[in-house]
Length: 217
Image (cartoon, rainbow, N blue to C red; front, side):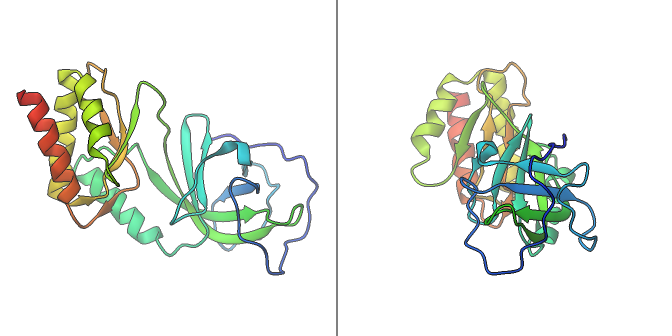
């Protein structure tokens, strides 16, 4: 994790109502550590993300940003922190690949009205970022054609890795399965899940059945 050297001068925390935060327009800083310490967005170790670092918008978080080979999903409250910690621990304890995700509390500084900032008590989920040859997959919408195309070009070892991981996903009732898979690898460590939630294994089971059919065919 690297710290950015900010260009603006320290200013007072902004207390007035602000427009909604927009990851494609506004800067944001991540300050890992105690939720109760005084806000200091320019302290050493605080990470600055600009709109150029924005990798993905999010319905449940402020957004996802990239720094080197890591993805930072930043939340503006701690409401989901315990649930996400428990979900990650469940993945760890059951060998479900989860992109080396971990969660940490800290202060989030948003800049809807720069150079003023707003301080939020939140947390970050930090995980590995995957580039090509990894390919993104999702179980949302009409997901089957894209998933079948990944399976079509996958090596046998890649398929075996997907099969093993999806069996665990079904057992844990992983819902909304999504993540990254390397279809061309000769390793069986070919798949990583992200944004882990549990509840319904319907789509995970459907993915497993497609993988089984590809292996058998």
